[in-house]
Image 1 (cartoon, helix red, strand yellow):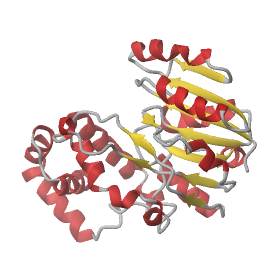
Image 2 (tube, rainbow, N blue to C red; image 1 turned 180 degrees about the horizontal axis):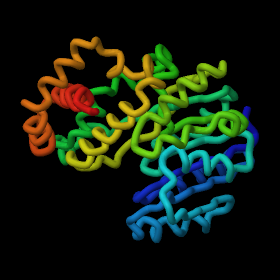
Image 3 (tube, rainbow, N blue to C red; image 1 turned 30 degrees about the horizontal axis):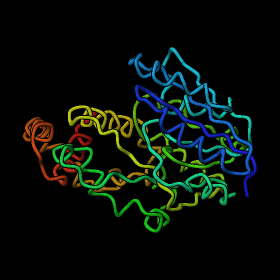
Length: 288
């Protein structure tokens, strides 16, 4: 059983004090030495920083504020360097803990890397037209541990995972990834190449912060540009890159005809989720 743990929380423009309080309460009830380190990665919403300030009032908790955004890879590498203990638990600041044994389950997994997954809330009337919510809901079955363990290195995300500090010091996340997306996918590939394992368990956090449709589409487009930039290194680690050449040519042909109209409909209407997948294919195909 793990005896000492650093809980590391990157946050950007979100209020994470309830998450920290929940984790702190669990840790205090366990026979373990611990710390919680939160890093605000250059938030532009200063009200979030203000509301998170009281994190430091909790014993063994640190709240660091970065004026410049380091990016998803950079801020996690920075957190590793700040950590004191041999095992690290990363939890994204916009997640929530719904399981009272969340920490305890991780303490039983002294593996190289252990990923717990995430879930989304039950049906909410207020989110029925939210594209991100419907997209995540549509992929629920793919997120359980049994499914993820079939492709452990592809179905890994940095939102909720346990890792040995020594591994992340020797194999940090690639800080060339300064735009959104795929830094976790490349890291999974890197782990595999160096002979490490990723264990998937059902110990999820809850994702409840759903951006509006326009921002979700923008983030998706940004991630597709990231994928295009690093496609040679991500080959065989992205389903989109694995599509036959025929689909790519078709997508490039259809984007000028249907792309803008479909994008507008995705933002403003409750479109079937499969059309979002088609839009991603068309958008990626036309990136130069």
